[in-house]
Image (cartoon, rainbow, N blue to C red; front, side, top):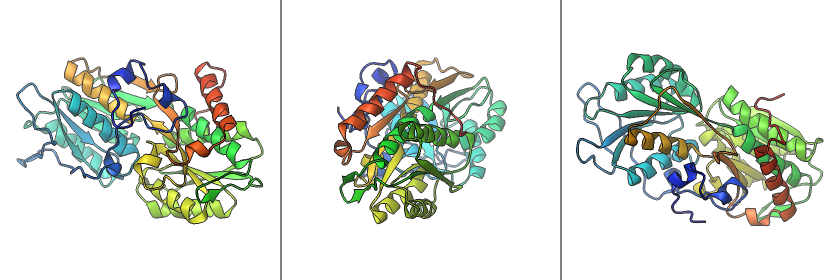
Length: 381
C-alpha cells in the first residue's frame, strides 16, 4: 500500500483501501502535520481590516473556492486528530481549485471568535468554514443562525442548522477491535522491541481527554473488545480533562502501568503523547488514535496499533462538495467500519510481531461487526 499518497475520492466511493479497514501496517494516507519536516504556519482570517495570510497555494481567479479551518484545541502537530483534519484539506487543495486558511484556538472560548471572523470575511469570502471537534458545537449552534448564507461543517458532533453539514464516526466500532487486541495480548507473555506484557496481568488502561459522550464511545468500544477477549480483564479508566496536556497523560498512564496494566489506549489528542512516553519509560505498550501514530509520532517502538479515524475524509468530502456546488447543509453523515471511516491499523514497527492468530481473531471480529453479528455499545455500561 502506498503510504505517501491516498486518493480519497476512491476511498469515499468504496474502491480500494481494503488494507486500511482491516489490520495493516500502513495508514493508507499521506503523512502531514506533526510528522512532516516542514511546519505549516497557521493564519487568522481577515477581521476589522486585517490582512489574511493565504495557504501555500494562492487563490487564482474568482472561481477559487475558499475554506476556513478552525482546529480543535491542542493545535497542529498532535500527530493525531488535528493533523488528520489538515491532511484532508491539504489533499483537497492539491486536487481542486481551492485555497484555505487555518486557525488554532488555544481554548474553547476562542471557537466563536474564529467562526465569526471567517463568516464575516469578504476578502476572501469563505465558501465553507470547517469546525474540527465536538467542543465547537455550542459555539457553532450560536454562530450558524447568524450567517444563514454561510456554509459550515463540523466533525464529531451534530449541529441542527440548515447551513451546517455534520460528520460523525462510529468510534466505538474501531475501538472494539483495538480493545480485543489488547485483551488477547495482555493474556499472554508477549515481547516486542524493548517492551513486554506480563501473562499474569489482569488489567489494561484507557486514558480519555475531556470527559464527554464522544470520548465515552471510545471507552465503551475498547472495554467491550477487551471483555470479548477475556472477561477476567479489567479496564482502568482516567479522564485528564484536556486534549493538550502530555504531562497529564503521562501521569495517568504511569499510574496504570504501576497498577499492572500492560497496554494503555488513549483518546486524548496531544495528551496521548504522554501516554506513549510512559509506555516507553515502563517497558510497556500503548495504542494510538485517529491516525497511525506509529508513523506520525516518534513512539513506534511502543505503539502496537492505532484506531484510525478518517477525519481527513470528512474534511475532504465537505471540501469537494463545496467545490462542486453540492454541499448539503443540514445533512448528517456517519462513518463506521462498513463505511471505511474507522479502522484498526497495526503499528509500523511492532505490528509484524503480533501473533497471526490474534490478528486473525481481530479481523474476524471486524467482519462480524460489519455483518451485524456483533453489536458494539456506544456508551460505557
